[in-house]
Length: 173
Image 1: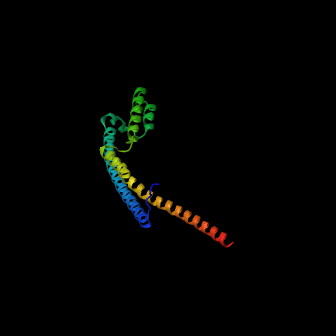
Image 2 (image 1 turned 90 degrees about the vertical axis):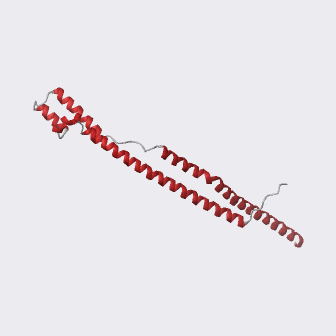
Image 3 (image 1 turned 135 degrees about the vertical axis):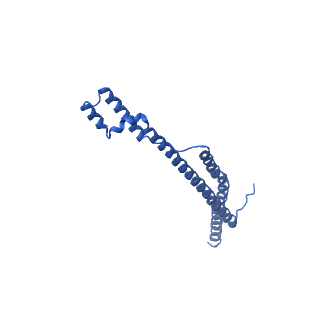
């Protein structure tokens, strides 16, 4: 028969304390990594958005769309055609330019910013979680083993007590 280690209440308390401390340390580390990543992504996204806005503004104000400065609304192009100020070919060209310029105005920068730094932070987060998982699991396993031994001891003591009571009743019955 293999001799099992008896886990004492003090060992269980120490294991539980260790598991709580490791969990709190892991959670703090993960929170700091996530915060750093969120700040970095926000800053890079803001910079990318500013750059995209400047590029978009430059495109909208380019000489290509200069002919549209005379028109405040899309309907103004149609009114100019109706008044015979422009011909049908010019109207179609201006309408196409108008739609292209509006598409540029409505264009947004899509997607979450991602680069080597964000990838490194994601990996650091994953490794941080994995780093302490094994030790935390071991500490909780010690706690579970203690509870199991405690239940078995209670069952054994109840069975012993029942045997003693049955013997006592037999002797004095």
